[in-house]
Length: 97
Image (cartoon, rainbow, N blue to C red; front, side):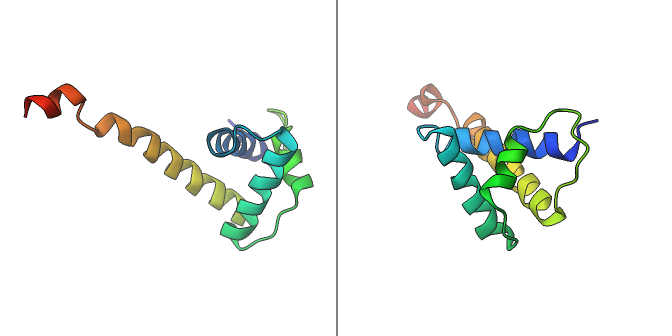
């Protein structure tokens, strides 16, 4: 069973690496904190996101439900976008048509 902190850690890291991989880690953390604050309607500081970033697998502390709901929804959205490429016809199929 994955703890809430470990789950949000994985989501936050995937988000940062997919959106702003060119930024240093502290800037990625600040960026993610600003996105979460804007999209979840619940403020979160960079320090909290940094705690999530470095959370261990056995970290039993909780995560605010609005932040967790946002993270899970964002994770589903990213997965759907990643899988969209596999649903596109390949170039050879388009040329043959």
